Length: 150
Image 1 (cartoon, rainbow, N blue to C red):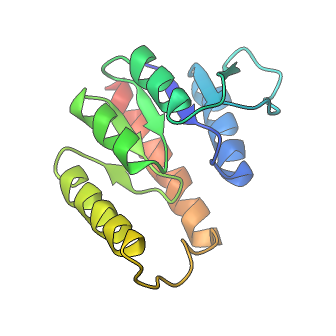
Image 2: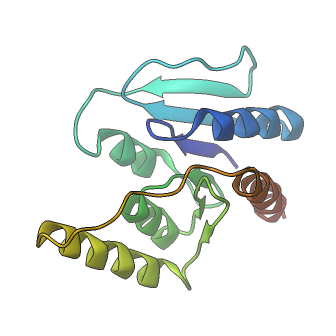
């Protein structure tokens, strides 16, 4: 089992939680991004830098995952693709994407995208990560790592 992180848009505080979990559980973790970023000096965490371009990092993750891996992403289409392949997925707020919920989450995302592109005013984006979100992510990651190992 490996952890794959869609790292370009992953908040730094979430990456820190991932780094600690990787070290604690001795789980190989790869951040996939189209720009350089800091990763801790540990044998369990590495950076895979890909070229810039639409969905390049996502495609690289999809190409490399294996059943039993864990993907951390806020990208719903990427989550849908990995869940279809039997891979566990979680977003930075601790919500697990599953075969049971991904279609409705993807439909809502597509609906909102259609509303925005048709000119409907949408207020703001996602709220800033709260302490509760960070704790929910940490708890969900621990739960998923435990589930993936069993």
